[in-house]
Length: 459
Image (cartoon, rainbow, N blue to C red; front, side, top):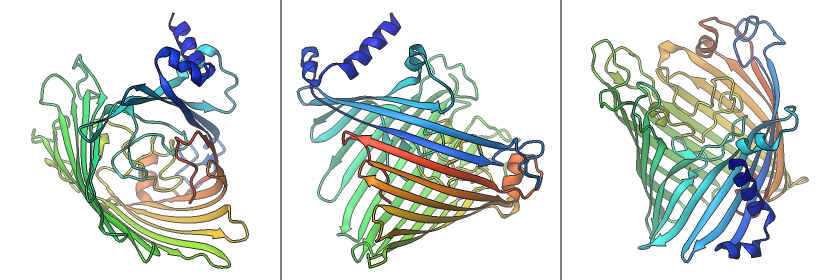
């Protein structure tokens, strides 16, 4: 019966004409979606007998993968004044796996959006499973990800928003994981999150925007309160442009508060969470000339570390992964260091625990006049630990070439090299010091349709 109902749903979504949806009580049907393919050829990402960390090339420490992601969104009017969305996502299919059966496809297609949206008391309400957050956000983003695996995160919750002339309010109540039995001690328990942000657009028109907000996360690992974790992230930021965006800038400060009772140090007391982070960036956009268009950028990111793991204070910066939430950051620090699903197991975001991290990032972008649909970008990253005694992570250089066929079709190819330093070598090689560079060649393509999806990267 389950397979029959799934097959019926596919027929209704894909096979029934839009005009026939009215028979089912729905109206205003539209579709959108995308097809994405990402190819990676990498070496020395993991520790092996003769691999990364000992200066010896090893053919066993190599991978070559091609992953795909397909998204199909259905937007519809549910009833008067209420619209909704369903989004079906197929991700994780890898080239070379061969054909799949209907039963395999049934279990592989996930519904990542299932929500209703309506306007009440001049507030916009959205209830159900949905994406939330902003692209490139450091600590709050649930949605399609740009990692090597093309993974997708969504969250169940209620979003509230309202805008006035000089202020906008966004709030979110999320249930990330539900555990009614309350039996998972010191692991994944009842995980909830809340977010509120006040935005002040155009404080100085075209020059200054500001926002302040807070995120609250909690993990009740059992029925008792003695092993719960509560984390608050306060944040404040500004951004803007000068002289018609000839110069752009951004700056943000984030601060932790809360306590973790699941990891008790020697003294037996709970751990206070006291980390902080700040993010500064400046860009220069040179007006288009006969050669083309140039852009330069410099960014500095600091996530604090902790110099004493035995006391009752954790001074390293924590994001919502501290309470067991995944997919909380949309900032990717390099093609290898940031996007690899192998190097750290999952993309790391900016929470690097006790060592912390300092990141200097410089980039240059060129769009040639003789080929206006193409672009080239060079990125350089230097990763050091916030705590000097821990050593450094390493440095990375990325070179990417892109072609934007249209607003909805494009591809990019590139090459990246990560040179590990002492901290990264110790992290992956049980303290072994070595000099093998991590290398990665990559290619990506995206085709979007329907207008409801974000178009391909215009750079």
